[in-house]
Amino acid sequence: MLTSLLSYARPGRRPLLASVAAGLGVSACYAAQSLLLTLAVARGLREDLTGAVWACCGALALVAVRAVLIRAREVAAARAAEHVRTELRPHLYRHLLTLGPGHVTRQRTGAVLTTLQDSVEALDRFVSIFLPQVLLDHCPAYGELLNRKPQEAE
Image (cartoon, rainbow, N blue to C red; front, side):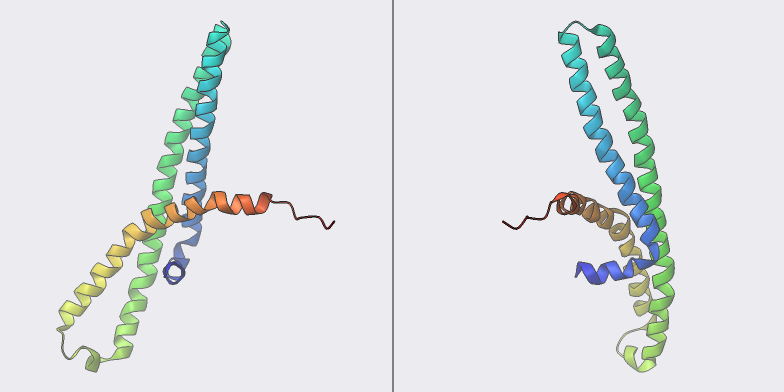
């Protein structure tokens, strides 16, 4: 099912990938920030206060970088959803016209068009929130596959 839904997200592929890349950057910022704060505590315990202050400043700078990346992720996700909506809506209307008036004899045309419009709008949250998160969650698995070394023959 996810594969068929991914095919509908094809028009917003670049903004979607930008959203995933920004999400990876946010995750990297969290990891780096935790390392810097650990370093600050370790240096503070060794009474190297200058090093502790610099590590805290680095962690604070990462907060600003993370905020920019979160904003970029949201903008890219919204742009991907917009591309998908603008591409999908005419496609569905053309398909409805291809089916002809005989297809909607038991339903009112206004109800069909409203359902169509609401369904396209419902894809907005799917493309802007769910899909980038699913792709982001799969990134560590892909990274693990890329880092594996082939087994040598004995």
